[in-house]
Image 1 (cartoon, one colour):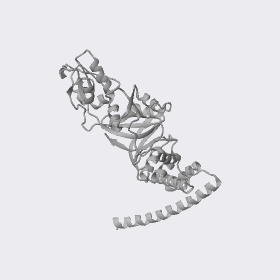
Image 2 (cartoon, one colour):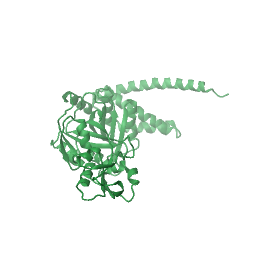
Image 3 (cartoon, helix red, strand yellow):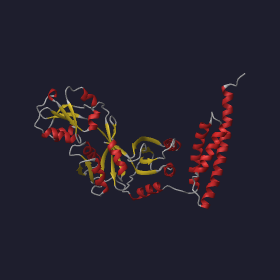
Image 4 (cartoon, helix red, strand yellow):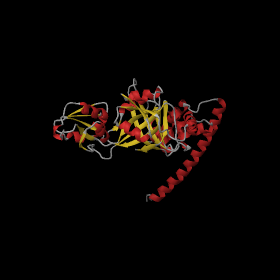
Length: 383
């Protein structure tokens, strides 16, 4: 007669208790190893020993269970390294920098700074900037690259950049520039985007033969544009530039996808309102600075990492977030210039800057990544 499910589960519970006791004994031994390594100036990671151990574990487990056993032991070895680092009193350079930034950052977010925005008056970046700051001095620049450069050079205290849209996805051009520039994120803002079809007064909807706008706005209104017959769609620098172009044109058959603010600003009429494909259409902007600033209540942290080009590298990083119960809000990958099939990974994580597990996370990530860049700890506001 076969065993009942309850009996089998009872056996599993007994095995689990034994495994936990053995795990505790193994970690106690790891603590002794850490003490020896600290006394003798040895590094925590011994890659050769770990590789040999994993090979031995696979042989002992047998062909059917080798992969499962090695996967489990990779997790145990990662936990052992983290535990040894803690026992050796090794902190995190990144977290030390975070604590220093918290001590030196003013308690109140500035309200009258100089801010670089891509575009011209009426751009969504300007709208977000006006809602993020009380009375900003806005410096308009031509490209996203110029926003980064204005901050890096010290010409502007802050820069504002769109990073993702709820309909069209990530602004890949900004992510690619993030790899090349040095900056810190000090705040993010989520702005509801409402696109409208604007034209010169007297123009009828059926007269329109060309529409101008930014590529993100065009993507967010793709369904609406597909319903317009015999209309050519043209990409320009941003939505405000499109409105100005239409305003200055002598033609009566052109229109722009832009904001209601631009209709008033450039003396245009609204042919149709809210033409985006999804009404719940938001763009997220990041506010960047030259030096790290961490304001009270910061609960979002951004990182960029390059990982070893081998199987399981990303998995082991993600496992650390899971083990520490830290929520990963966003994961983006972008190809690294000059390196075939290798990527820079961008992470947004949700955790209070004061959470004790943050120091452990940074300590472990510094060890396991080829290169890690801390981009800032901040909070997000809805404009």
